[in-house]
Image 1 (cartoon, rainbow, N blue to C red):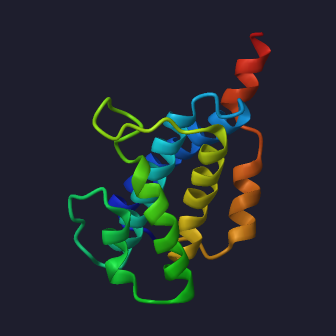
Image 2: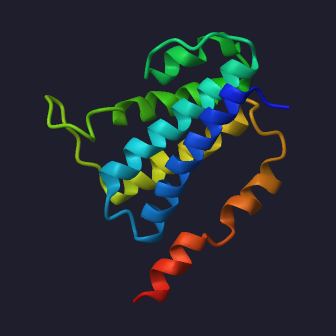
Length: 149
């Protein structure tokens, strides 16, 4: 059974995943938002796993820093590589600050694919195939959206 706080992080991350999937469905017309939500998804999943491992969560958005307590397996090395990319999207895609980014649909696709792999790389989900099948099922919200058109 999951810790309640870990469940909360996973539940919130699932909202970010839905935004990612909707953006993907529409061809990443909102690429900046997709990249931001990809970073948020990864951050919340990493924090959920840290809670499950018994760690206190530090107040940071730096994904590479959050991975420091995960060891040095090949999967964690891959997660660090992905998180270095995802760290670019934390705030610079959301606010008009120095270094603001405008992401392309291709960048958004890459960021989303990386983010969706994070839970598997850090051992949050063991059965990748079963979870991917669940994620690929049609979403009720998208069906409703297209019925109105």
